[in-house]
Image (spheres, rainbow, N blue to C red):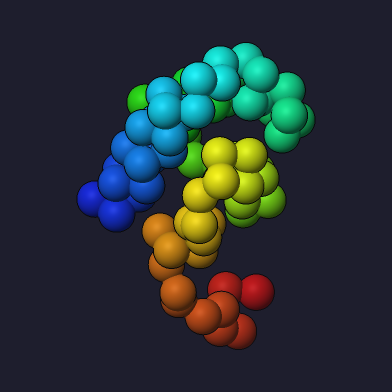
Length: 79
């Protein structure tokens, strides 16, 4: 997990604590398992773009899932 991604995970972890909403409830609201949220917060996995954006929305955060991703363009070789 890169430095920027870790920073976003830390922001989300802090926001979850501040919200008082349990990870289980957040997971249910965005349609994932509690384990998936836990793995993301521990740095063992990444959330898909829609899931990440839904999580940020539930917590009232202005984060973009694209902020921690590479901006490399696809080429014919990638196809």
